[in-house]
Length: 86
Image (tube, rainbow, N blue to C red):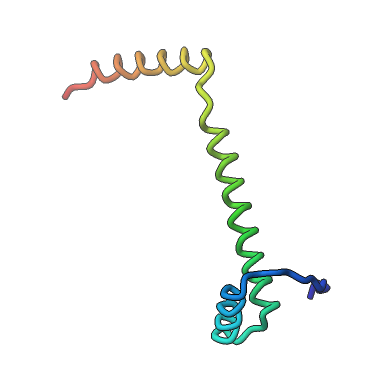
């Protein structure tokens, strides 16, 4: 088990009441609940960052060489289809 570190935070009283209620319902300590919430937030943020990186990688436009290859392949496929007996 990883070592724990104590910290102090300030939150609104209404949120504190909700934290206490949820911790009681889940049968975990407030500290455990805060740790779970922060871990969940970090996981979501990491997923968002990864998705953003993936989207950026696929958002670029094809380079001219790729466009030429695609055009050539389309022409070859069209000729191939013309020879097919439909």
